[in-house]
Image 1 (cartoon, rainbow, N blue to C red):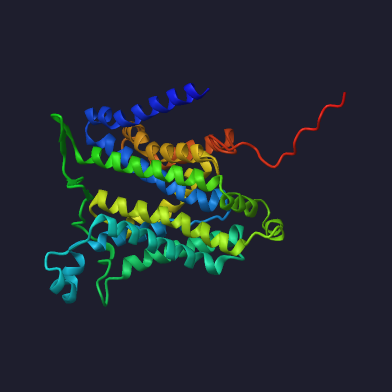
Image 2: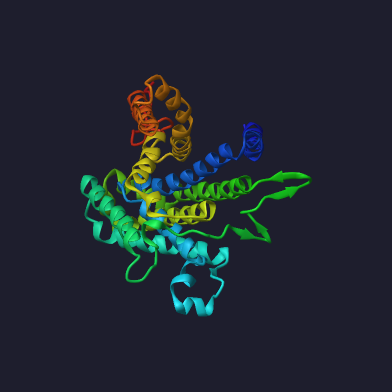
Length: 361
């Protein structure tokens, strides 16, 4: 059994390493889609802590994604120096902070706002909690859209550009790299960085799931009153769930900003929040492999259906908008999957069943 697991692990590791090299033969487009899919995996795993483990429906998760992205954009671009005299005097060429400083700042800011969101919603559950978190996500987007006057912090709907790429150990991921005569473009280098972050996220989530904290979260999810009666501090554990989930969103947002080189409020709409929740539900709430599967499918499905929507648009003489048609096909695919697999594509094992009674002789 151990040898079989080791063999599967080695095969999977080799496959993950060569996937971008094979996709690169078709151009940078397919590799870029895979990169964004890995970012969505990070987001879905972070939301799974809140929704899957603690049972708290959060429809404003994209706000933490936006906070991480804008934190990176402000600290790794000339935007602040161009708009504030004090920054221009200290950093005439722009504020280009190192990676080891920006990532913890983005994660910490997102975690702080996660706890800030959780504090007033401790007594809310279900639909009421969903409405409050939905409002928080929209408030964050509106703030980012309007924080241009009187002080230009976010540059409003025009967004922030000229964002630095990730640099570490003297390697600039914004530029290609040649290894043993083989050229690795920027999107491939980012793939390996995102893959390492996803692996780290999976390890942390597995450790949390099997820890006392994870079991306490699941007890709250199943019956909060019973969990409180058993001595579980539901208030602190709910705040911890919001903070931990938001941390992963902040890190993913920072990576998104460095990868795109540009951020604007349009990238953090309500549709993004709904899509991330759908990834968790579609794959299997509370089950890490299922969440990963759901994130990969839903992030890649719209791009795959792009090749289906085009011919359908031509068949109708251009009367149908390809983008709307693609969204319709995604919705139909999700409805079909949820009808056939109500608990998700890869649900967790059923829990809560009593042990089988011993057979009397």
